[in-house]
Length: 346
Image (cartoon, rainbow, N blue to C red):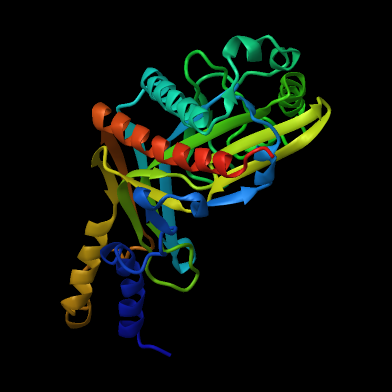
């Protein structure tokens, strides 16, 4: 059994390690690749053969999104040690996002046309009975997925509806049982004898790392790496083909790993709340041996918890942000168009 002195020092070390050692072993971030390496191998392919069904393609929507708020926390010693960081994207608004979405959608259309496919006109698409049945998602659509610290805002170009399906989870306002929009897209496909495609591109502004939530570790740490990143899972291409409205086939290309795009702003620490001073005061008291040499001295109270909370803002430069988003979107579009070109009708 440790002596009183040993017990005090060991207990102290557990608390202090969380704050002073907050940069210690954090869990590795998701695998990350540079934008230049983006290829079809970066995407999980599901039912890509559907792309070869027809040379006619309808594009009724385009989903463009950004993470507006993110955060991460880590704990040690069953929660007595807590480190937490939250960050907000600052400098963008709905109008800016819709302008970027407009330019990105135009690029996507041109790349699909360059494969030799026929991209159907808007008047033809909007005149179908299936299009009339589409339930529109309000713009901007903001969603915090379950068990995810990120809040994502989605928009479409101003002249296009924002369309969500049950298969777009977790970035959807439709439950797994709401099949109305899926059937409406099938109806468009059946009526126009075409393939229906809806791309989704989502950016994050920070790569977060953390040491997790541990019971026996006396330290905890989090890290925030600023920049623009394509978000895996959220970034995808959905496509559908049907002969009847009630049933049809669907497939997806889904980004598998985070892709680094570059910098478009500055990360600024806007606030901090912690008890570092209280812990350091206790450290100094114990190191001085005053509690042993002067037993009647009233020392500081021993901290029972260690905590450190910090807030950040990623403040974007609008021109840099727009350029970076469009560069990344073009890279993703090139992969999507490549998949379309590789799966040509017989």
